[in-house]
Image 1 (cartoon, rainbow, N blue to C red):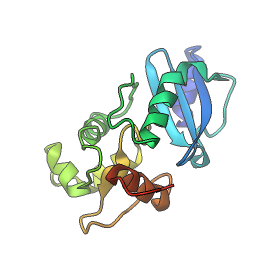
Image 2: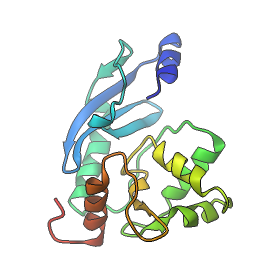
Image 3: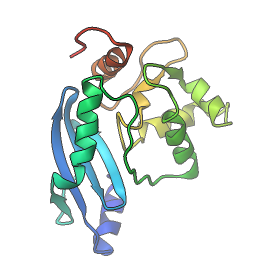
Length: 175
């Protein structure tokens, strides 16, 4: 979470619950409140930069998210049904909603994603919005690949991206 957003939460007297969960894809950080899940990131990405007094550790609010993630990793769930709290620019939100429409086991290029949101010239901006996705896996930014079909960029690393795609393809033992 960016420092400005954390400071705004503190000024408003709000707090976010957070917890770490050890997934097959690595240690994940979940954060949110009653409005929904705000963040699902790889713990090594540095979320949050500094946990201030407005972050409170609690696994309780994330039981359903963890249950669904566990089912996803066991190939028992193909579509998440969770309350998400997304904040971003109109462009970022359009990209994040479009990401959610990419079917399980499928991939699209950044160019195709740009076309889907009606901005075919905005391929690089789509890449930037994809990179800024605050809710990895659930908002499946791992399903976006380069125009040449190669894996490019992923916050959890390309090896994790490859394994997530292998999991969705049904490859044996991606982990």
